[in-house]
Image (cartoon, rainbow, N blue to C red; front, side, top):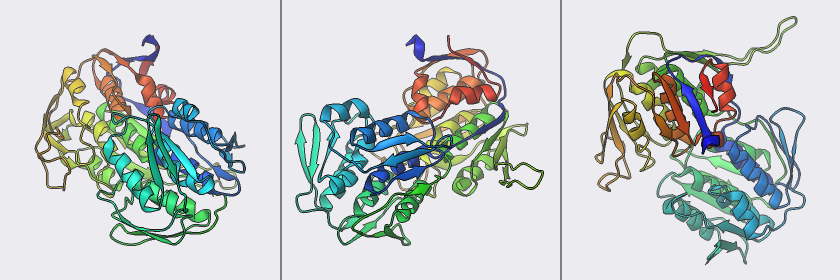
Amino acid sequence: MTDDVLVVHGGTPLQGRIRVRGAKNLVSKAMVAALLGDSPSRLFDVPKIRDVEVVRGLLGLHGVKVTDGDEDGELVFDPANVESASTDQINVHAGSSRIPILFCGPLLHRLGHAFIPDLGGCHIGPRPIDFHLQALREFGATVDKTPEGLHLSAPNGLHGTKFALPYPSVGATEQVLLTAVMAEGVTELRNAAVEPEIIDLICILQKMGAIIKVHTDRVIEIQGVPKLHGYTHRPIPDRIEAASWAAAALATRGHVEVLGAEQADMMTFLNVFRSVGGEYEVTDTRPPRPGQPGQEGGIRFWHPGGELQATALETDVHPGFMTDWQQPLVVALTQARGLSIVHETVYEQRLGYTEALNTMGANIQVYRDCLGGTPCRFGRRNFKHSAVIAGPSKLHAADLVIPDLRAGFSHLIAALAAEGTSRVYGVDLINRGYEDFEAKLADLGAHVERP
C-alpha cells in the first residue's frame, strides 16, 4: 500500500492554471459507440484515465483496432473485424467497471450475442443492472444467468419498443440509445436522463447516421436504421473535474483557472458557487489572429477573501445539482459560516466520506431524514442521505483512506486545505477519473509527494 499513498503538506492556497479534457462520463460511451459503425471512428480530447484504458482493452478483445491519432488525446477505432471474446479475458479487463454492460446492445447487433461478467452487487448494485436487463429484454434479448456472468442473445433480432424508466438513470438511458439505434422499428424512451453527456452521445450517434428526436418531458424517440458509419467527434469537457478544481480553489482560499471548462453545462454549480461566496469569471476562446496567438477559454475560480456563507442544496438529475459535485463542494462548506444542509437524492451511500472529514476537525452530522423538498428515493429507507455541516471548522492533517473516486478527490481537497501533513492512501483510484492529477497539483503549487 506504500506505493499507493500521497503525502500532502496542506495549508497552501492553490494558484495557477490547469486544463480539463473530454468528459469521463461521455468518452467511454463514445468509445463503445464505435462498435456500431461499419467504418472507423475518430475521438479527440480523450483523457488518460483508467476507465479509458479499460474500454480500450475491452474493444481490443472484441476485435476493434484502437490506435493513437496524430493529435495528443486522439484515438482511432476500426471495427472492421468485430469478434467474440472469452469470458475469462473480459473478466480480467473489466475488473469492477460497469462498462461491459453497455457493450451488450452493440455486440448483439454485430455478433448476435454478448456477455456480462459477474461484477457483484457491491460494485454496481441491483438497481442499475435491473434497469439495463429489463431494457434489453424489451428489445427482444434473452438473458441466461451462469456462474461466471450473464450471456445474452437475440435469436429473433432486436426490435424497437416503448419503455419507461422508473428513474432517469444515465446508464440505462445510454443502454437504450446504443441498442435502439439499429433495432428494427421505433423506440420511445420515457423518463430518460438528459444530462449533457447524454445529449453529446446522441450527437455522436446522429453523426453516425442515427435518427434520434429529443422531445420535451424526458422523452426520446429513436428510429432504428439498418447500418451506421464511423464518427469524428470532440467531446464536451469534463464538468465534474472542472467543479472539483473549483471546490479545491475555494477550500484552500486559492485561485484556479480551468481551461476547457464550459459555462452552459455548469450553470447550476456556478450559481451555488457564487451563493456561498466564491467568485468566477468565464473566459471565451480567442482564435489566432495575424501576429497574435489564440487562447483557449475556460473559467477562473477563486476565493475573494472574507467569510464563505452557508447554503442549502439538494442533488438531483440534470438540470439539478449534480451528485458528483456534492462531495468536493462539501469540503469547502466546512469553511462557511453557519449551517449548510445537503440532501443527497441520487445515490444512497454518498455521505460516508464525511466521517473522514470529521476526524480532520469538520463538524458534519448525517441523517436518515430528507432535509429538503426534492423528491427522494431514500426517505424512510434507513439510508443516511442528508447532512448538516456546521462551520467554519479548522481542518487538521490526518491519515485518510480513499473509498471511491469522488470521495477520494474530496479527501485530497481536505488534505490540501488542512494544516499539517496528511497521508492519503488509495490515491491511484483518483486516476480513474482525473487525468494526471498529481502533475496538475504541482502546476497549482501544491506541496505533495510520493513517499
